[in-house]
Image (cartoon, rainbow, N blue to C red; front, side, top):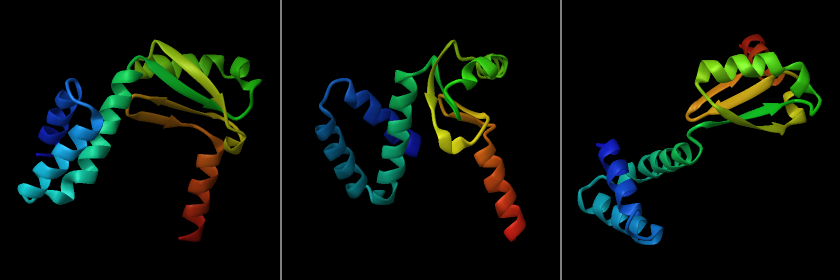
Length: 125
């Protein structure tokens, strides 16, 4: 049912302004007793729009700016695995090391930050 609402809202966005679409969606959900679906439908709609805008472009986040040359082979392998043709690179020092690749609705996180958080959660349990 949620997918139907997402599809209908997506089609409505092609012909109507966003305010009108959200207003109509809210009204429809309320009259049909599906008010609790509003947030999940809006999230799904945002994901669909985001995926369609960057459908062939991956986003690679590295821990250091100079790591691009070092991680070139790993980046190429991950992009091939995901099926991405092009990518943007961003730097986030909080990753400590490794990288994070986002493509469409998939994320591959090989960062040290993720591994340390996982280790911490395992130890405290």
